[in-house]
Length: 407
Image (cartoon, rainbow, N blue to C red; front, top):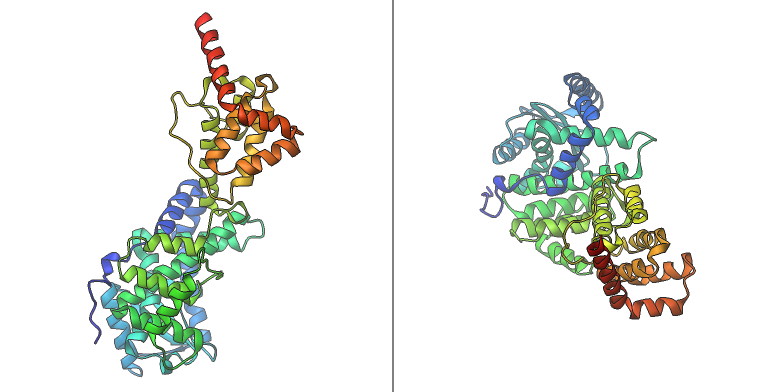
C-alpha cells in the first residue's frame, strides 16, 4: 500500500486561482445564466439524462464481480474525502481513458479501453482519483464550480458566443484537468504512479518509468515560453511537470502552470478574464498619460470617456508606469496615438508625454511608427520632439501654473 506523504496532502487540493476568479466573475456578471445553471430543475434534468445514457452505453462493474477495482476506488475516495456513492462502468472498445459523470451525491466513473489490464494498483488509484477530483471540485462551495462548467459548456455550444467565452471555456477545461491530476496524486499518495498512469493512458504501454519521463518533461519545458497546444487536456509533459512542481511544493507551481496553460497576454487570445485585465491596463495607461494637469483638456478628457464613461483623471501623481506584455504593444500604441491627435491645441506636448509613457510601457517603437504613418508626422519633427520632450513638458507645466495663479 502506498502511504500518503506530507508532500501530497488533501488540504493542498484547492481550486486554482484561475478557476476561483472565473467563478467569481460569472457569478457577479452573469446572474441570470448563473441562476439557471444552478437551479434544481436543471440539475434534475441533467441527472436523469446521465443515468439513462450510462445504462444504455456501458457495462456496470459491480463490486461483487470486481472487488479489487472497487477496493482501489474506495481507498482513493477515502484519501480524498469523497463520500459519494461510486458506480463504475466499462465502455466499449477504444483508447484507454476514464471519465466521470457528475450527479450530486453520486460519482459515475466510466473506464474505456484496456485500462484495467495495463494499470497497476497505485496507478489505477491515480486514475480513479483524477475522476473523483472532478467530483470533489464540482461538489465544493455549494456546487459553484459545476455551475461554471455548465455555463461555459452551454455558452461554447452557442454559435453566438464571443471568442472570449470560447477561450474561457477552453482554459477552464485545461485548469480542471490540472486540478484533477493533483487529485490523482492525493488518491495514490505519490507522484510517480500518477505520472506513469498519465503516460500509459497516452501511449498504451504496459511499462513506464516515471522518473525518466519527468526528466523528459523538464527537457521539453526548458524551452522558454513553453505553452500547451491542448484544447481540452494539456499535453502529458505539461501535466507531469506541473505535478512535480506541485508535489514538491515549489513556490512558483501555480505561476508556471498558468504560463503553460494560458501563455502571454495577447489580444488575439483574450478570454473573459483577459478582457478585464486589458481593460484595467488601458484605464491605467490613460490615467498615466492624463495625470499631468496641463493635459487634462476637455478634448482629451472627452476622448478618455469614450473608453470609460466614468473616467476621472488622477488627482495625485501616480507610481511610474511598468512594462506591459508584448502582445499589447501595438494596441497601446494605437490608444496613445489617438490621444496625441485628439487635441491639436496642445501642439507637441501630448506627443512628448506619450513618447515618455510608451518608453516605460515598452511600446515606444510601435507608437513612433504609428505617429509617422497614421498622423503623417515628419520623422525629423518626431526626432526633435523626442530630443526636447523634457523641455516641452516643463514649459507646459510652468504655463499651466502661471494660468492657475492668475485665475
